[in-house]
Image (cartoon, rainbow over all chains, first blue to last red; front, side):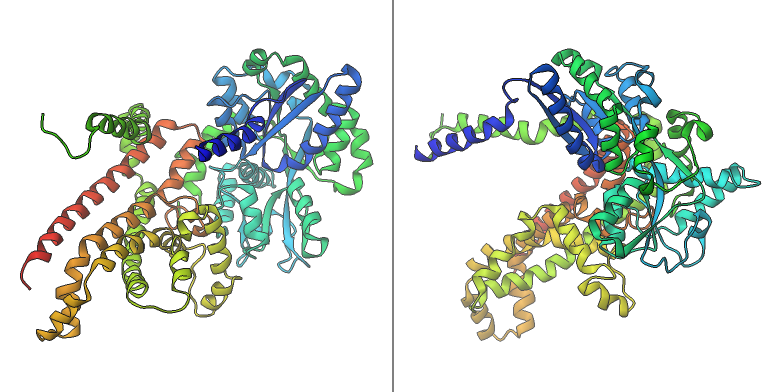
Length: 333
Length: 274
């Protein structure tokens, strides 16, 4: 009997952490991996602002994982109020399933991406292999670390950045882009399943000469690991990565949290939100915030998905679906 | 009705069936149901894709080799733990279960750190020109790691019940050491050894968490079948993922049936006069 009583005592200790916080509103933000630090800052600032304006407490919970996995979790019933993911494609799949409105990308400014990033190279101290641009990645003896685009959202940006670079060179065309990207993946010794895994392989296991990474991840890795060990190389041309945000219509209507969820996303576009994005190494949309953090973000020429590829559905069908171009030219393929 | 020694047959059978149904059969049924969404094209594609075949070969071929290594090493370790008394034996015995308790991701990261070209062991192996991490060999190491406790733990109780006098009798009847081992000990141990082997094999074939960290995951070379399942899920291809899972289960099932036949055969062998 004592043991049973003890068990119940333990369970009752656990219970409060499972039950929703009493009093005030609770929002669940379903996000991807590298936004942990960003949303820690954003949530604190937004909660303070909300409290000042509405005299009501607000709790924001976070869920982080790979972007595709998070979209699947929402589709399978994770009751998130807002989604802040890595790829518009992941949100398109939710729109297909009727969880968010079809026109979700037009509801907020800048294609519903309050901040952007780009793909840069992280190389070892002193840049021993003299890597300056994409074309250096396929030189003999250079090993490139990038995760598998079939399992990692970040890796899809890497793939498309390389493709777009080759396409936009003088005399570039589809055939040449295909040959370049094929050669690039011949230089990849390890295909991790996620972006953080690839960063670990490069940083902790000393594998490879260059890591293709989100700029925000590269800057974060440099800060966390000390400036001395790695250098960031900005290529001549890269892709503008636009991580999208949206309210999840079906869930906010059920929870009655639409107003606060929309205010939360609008906060990301406010001067304060933009500055927090910049502080956490995401490129802000607002010119003022960008000017303030200009030293941190080197000038880079970028192209967007729309410039080169159309939309994400086309991209997915052409490159990453089973039997698509990545399967045809990928390592071992 | 015939009286049984223990009462409550109806109740215990009911509980058995409902527990088995809830924990084992229901998820399997859900899997089969999802897989039934897959059309003939999907199945044909799975069976004819070189990449799927390479992945299945690595998962099952690797698991066979890993389980064999585990069986050999496990037999020795179980023997030492049961037959010899030495300081630290109990501690060593407790270590055997660690692969069970450790989260597989932690195991994978630890093994990778150890065997990577800049790791303790990997550095020396690299000098000898041997690659383990980020190669198919790494898959074997992770599979052997997760399967090892099964062999030791199934052999230990059998070894403990094995009378030393049998060996002494064999010796006094003129058997050589090798003969005692192959004709007297091995037949008695064979069923338990096969059970351990089968469990290690099944575990290794389905292993995902620890393997993906060390494998390198290059298609056609070091990509395991469970990773292909995850890739299909990432593309919302639930039916394709379930179909591949059903193929893996089918393979495992056939292997396990073969092993249980082998076990029965070895059980008879034990009773035959040597």
